[in-house]
Length: 204
Image (cartoon, rainbow, N blue to C red):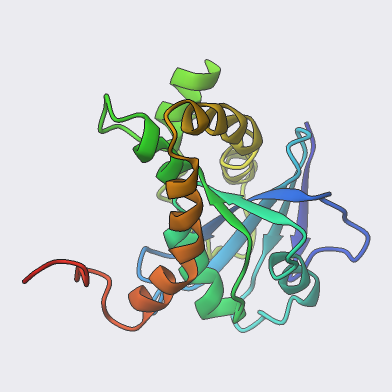
C-alpha cells in the first residue's frame, strides 16, 4: 500500500479505472462555513492519492474532471456530506454515485450501527483507527498519522460495495438504493440551500 500526497490537484496521468472511492476531510461539518481541506481517492488497489487543498486553491481541473466523468462511478461512505462539500468548494455535480452508508441502512436493518468502522469490522474483519478523525486538516503539513487515517477511509470501499451489492440483490432492494443514489445531488443542494434539517416529505 502506498499513499501519494498531491498539493492542489491530481497529476494528469493518474488513472482510477471505471470506479473510484472518494472521501473528504474538512475543518468541520458545516459545508457553508468549513472548507474542504483534503480529498482521498483510491481505485481499490491498496494505493491512495490524497489531494491537499490550501486556502483559496480550488481550481483542481483534474479532480473536477474525474468527479464529473459519467463513466467513472464515485463510491462514498455518507455521500450526502462529501457531495455537498465538493459542490460547495469545487463547484462540481457528480454522477454516478454509490454510498455504502445508504446501502447499509437498506440491508443491515438488524442494527442501527452503520459507521464505516462498523462495516469494515463486521463485513471485512478490518479494524479502522479513528484517532485522527478530529484533527487540524487545514494545517500546512499533514502528519503521517493523518495521511494514514485519511487513506484508510477509502481503501476498503470497493470491497464493501461488492458485499453490500450482494445483500441488496438478495433482499430485492437494489432499485431503492439506485434511486437514493440518484437523489444525492438534489439532497446536497437542499443541504446547501438551508433545508438540511427539514424533512420535505413529512406531512407537517
